[in-house]
Amino acid sequence: MIHHLHAIAAHAFYCGELEAGRRACEALLRHELPPGLEPLVRRNRTWYTHRLDELASTRFVRLDIEPAYPGWSLFNPSILAADAGWIVSVRSSNYAIVNGSYEMPAADNGVIRTENVLLALDDDLVPGQAEQIPANYERTDFPVDGLEDVRLNRIDGTLAISATIRNMAPHDGTCRIATGYFDSLTCRATPSGRHEKNWMPLVGRRRWLYSCHDEGHVATVEADGDSWQVTRHAASPRIAAGFRGGSQLVPIDGGRWLAIVHEVAEDEGRRIYEHRFVAFDEAADWAICGISLPFAFRELRAIEFAAGLARKGDRLVASFGVRDAEAWLVEMTLPEVRNLLVKP
Image (cartoon, rainbow, N blue to C red; front, side, top):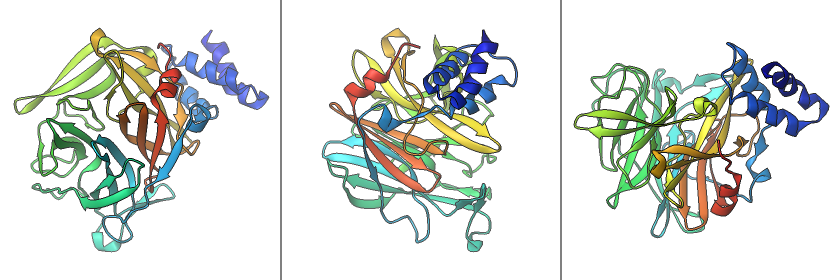
C-alpha cells in the first residue's frame, strides 16, 4: 500500500490530480514509513499545499512599523487579545538572509542581535503606541543575543512572555526558554540537554505545550520549583510526529484548545514551512481531537512562521513572519476554522 500511495504522491501533480496527490501524502504520513521516505513525502506534499485563503475567508494586514533600529528587520510577531484591541510583539533583528546565509552589519562583529517591539493595536488591527520589551540579563559571549520568537500570554492580569535565549549566563549557547513577565525575565534549567525552542503557552495558564508527539504522546511543561516538569498525556497520532511549535493555545469550546503548528520540508537545501490548525481536548488528557490540512499563509513553498493566535468571540487573528523579513496578521472566523478540523 505504501508503495502505491507514494507513486500517487510523486506523480499526481504532473497529471493535474492535485486532490489525489494531497490525499496520498496525508495518508502516507499517518504510517510509520521506511527510512528516507518521509522527507520525500514531505517535499512532494509542498506541491499540493493550499494557501489559507483557499480554505477560509481571510483578511491580511502587514505590520509596517518602525523596527528596533534603522535598517533592522521585522518578523515573527505574536498576538494577544486585550480588553481594548490587541497586543503584538514583533521581532526585530540586525541580520538579513542572503542566498541562504546570515548577513549582519560589520559593526556587530558577527553577532546576531534581536530586540522586540511591543505594539498596541486597536480593535481593527490598526497599530498604535509601541515600545521595546526589555531584555536585561547577564550575558555570555555566545554570538546570538536577545529574546528570539517571543510568545505573549496574560497570567492573572499581567502580561507574560516566553522566548528562546542563547546567551544567558552561565549557560553554554544551547537554546533555552526564558520566561517571566514584561519587566522581569528569568531563565530556568530546561528539561533536557537538547535545544529547547518554541514552547506554546496556554493562554491564561502557567503552562506550555511542550510537544505534540513526545515519544508518541502529547506533552506539556510546567515550572516545578527552579526546574521544569514535563508531563506526557494522551497518545498522539503518527501524523503529529512532524508537528513543531507555533502559536499559543487559545480556548475555544467544550474544553478544547486551538493552536497553529508548523511542519518542515527540505528541497535541495531549501527549507519550506507548512502550517496546520490543531485542536486539543483538555478533558481527554490533552488528546489531539482535530487537525486541518496543511496550508501556507501567503507564499507557497517558502519560510513562513506562526508565533501567535488570539481569539475574541468568533474572531481569530494569527500572527506570522515571512522569510525573516516581514511581519503579518491574518483575521479569520472561528466557525470557518472549526470546519477545517477533522479527527486525526
